[in-house]
Length: 150
Image 1: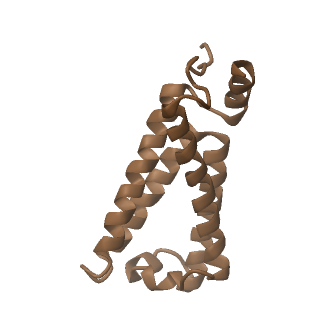
Image 2 (image 1 turned 45 degrees about the vertical axis):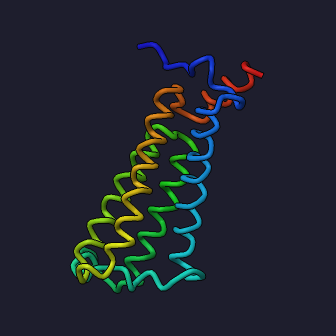
């Protein structure tokens, strides 16, 4: 099986590649920062968004659950960094779980946040499609292509 290669137009001057890069940076940085915040709670007390049925899935407190959530979010950001094609799908699946949690916790209390997260999920799927279009399977492959294009 032949390894995928990035398309020739994937340069930093290409507007589509710029859009891909913007989404990629966002989906690396935001999940990592959000994950870290689950441990330090600089932005918000995340436990207030956790549906009781979700908390019942794992042993321990809601705070313990948020530590697990934080670790998963950090890993998701790292996976997007390493492999945007597959990491973006991981983030999209993770966001789908968050949306289900928000829609089922005291309806319609968090419908506005669920709507926002739905748009973010679409952004993650857009990153996947752009990564696929540019053949950006891994950071190593992408770096090699950009050096060759320079």
